[in-house]
Amino acid sequence: MSSTSSYTSPIRAGARFVTQRLLMKSLVWSITDVTVLGRERLKGVGSPVIVVSNHASHLDTPLILGALPRKLSRWMAVGAAGDYFFDVKWRRGVTSLFFNLFPINRAGQKGKNERRGMASTLLDEGVPLLLYPEATRSRTGEMAPFTAGPAALCRSRGVPCLPVGLVGAFDAMPYGANWPKRGRPPVFVNFGAPMTAEDDETVPEFAARMAKEVRGLIDEAEEHRAARGR
Figure (cartoon, rainbow, N blue to C red):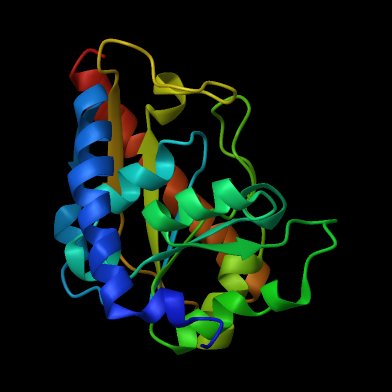
């Protein structure tokens, strides 16, 4: 069995999709008040693609997967810290079932050899990815600078990125919280238009442009939240 077979198996993808939609999405949508913006920008988006987003809460991944169309979320693999999600057997099993995680070595981490190059291999096999360019959850809710990894992948594999701005997830379930706050706090998922690296654009420049686009989507979602008075 290849190292990527669990990510490309139709049987596993079908079972995972049912689990995500019937259990995970139903739960998250029942305990938070979710508004999805920018769906019209997803027209024509296919695989492979790299979805990039700000990262401030454990709610981020279920919100994005639940808001994406089936053709993307059914197969999407989510990059996750190898030193946290994959070094404990039960955690690896549960999160892989729900989120189709693949391990990423964080800066300074002495990772396992089989983790290296996994993102590129998955993209080459047509698997869409969800990556968080900040490389960690925000402790304050503010977006940190983007690392160059996702931008470098887009350029080296010739795939577009799909920017997403999340608002309210940190307020609903901040760093260190084990469960969202009561009262169905409002959260917003705002999809942007697909982006590709320009021919004369360096990887750091593309990463900065990604961050600027995500920041703009956050600001747009904040305006919607303010208009609702929440």
